[in-house]
Length: 413
Image (cartoon, rainbow, N blue to C red; front, side, top):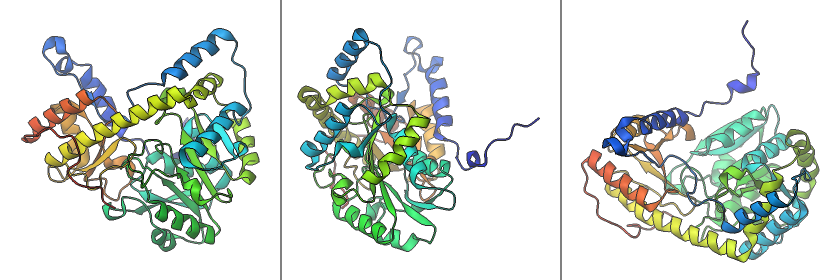
């Protein structure tokens, strides 16, 4: 007997990079990577996870909560103090007045994206996304039985969509767009004026704009560090998705949030009640402490450290012949062109995993437009790891790398 699976499963592509990750972990556990046997440990630059861990205040708050009482269910939309704290953060950080009632706390940004897609899209709908983009975002659309339509982008537009792209690719079936700023895998953001024109174009067509802003706190350039919510102050047709995973370094705590049009909150709440019950009570109580002055100061110090890592790795990659066509202005990724060394980023990354013991992410998962020549490097690891990786890549590629402290050129506008 063959067990039948739902048709939607066939629309969810495998996460191909995990196959390379399995190989990297296997090599890392072998004798060739064992320092006790003269091996060199694997350097993992393929994972988008900050190496800092949760802010000290959040850890202390979690310990107090666990020691003090049981952890009951909360409201499906999250505890009121946390929704209020998030709203205040938008006010102090971005100068935006967001009603706490429009904020829904979720079990990570992934749950937020799933809830938003389930509430807004259905079979027959089409959603526009940039190519390249984070693969799970298009799969959330597919899981809602809608169709994700990838629109190729390039370095001249910072690997982001434009209003002209939206107008050109909009069809009678199109329901909206799903953007990310700063984006994964490129680390590039959308200029505020470009975001504004897209919101207006989508609104003119009666659609909805969803913006993945989970890296918004990790912006290094004031030109781009603005929430898309600034273009929809009335909360009409724009959904922002955010998370405690990146800026607050709380990846495993699985806590995120949505900022919704008020009219959409009841539908999302109903879905959340049935699909998730509520976000983690412990994570919510701990996250409250993230907005304390000391915790925010710590997060800002970490943001500065990530910028320092970017300023080291981008020019180093360029000098290796792994050109980064647009300097990332946020997040912690460099989207590098490896065509000078290998026509296949998959083969190149596999070779570097085996020979240099540096794990990288080939572009295959992020969309077909230029996946064959691009790879993603995460500089969320330590500076020591980055220096080690550069030395090993230089060894394998026959390059001599000077030490750098700043990018060799300005970001493409």
